[in-house]
Length: 251
Image (cartoon, rainbow, N blue to C red):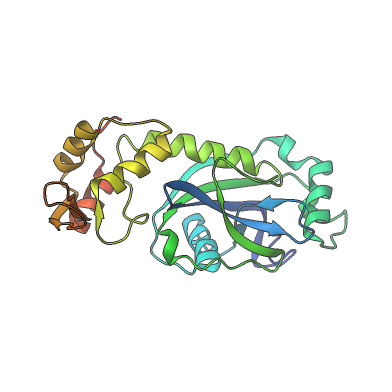
């Protein structure tokens, strides 16, 4: 749970929130979008409370739009975080200090709360990071060089990575991470970064082409013709069909 968005507002459900782990890919690095607390002591995931008249998915999409300016982005619900320890009074007091807000101890924010985690995959260059009213900045951070995070947000990011790695075996990725045209090396680099290990190039290419989600374009003439890699783009119809129905591509 982040931002204490509209604290105490009658339109929001008390004690239930969404947190978005927004991944981007830039310079062969997997990055995550974070908000900086007002006193600069902690960072946090973009998130907020759920309006009484909206679904969980709608709430997560609203948070994503507010922080990135992007619509119709792939969002995957991956876990519910409700351990009683995440609502300890010491953590709540620390969050209040970091966010520099004034909350009475009788407020429902001091009660137990749960958050529903979503992860999103977005094209880095298309994001316009926008802080919320409880933050001083919104910025990308390398996944392996994270700053101090509020509450259990480090755990949420770790769980998002674990679940995303599992999802790679039956769901395609890359559509929201890459430009319209890309090389097979670009796509493989994303998979290797997420998995944290190298993949056999010929085996990866074979699996990707067999899935039917890629359209082959003309060669890139950046060097000798025999060295120029082919360009690819995602076949949207097949991509979203596989995304819905799944495939078996164990890496």
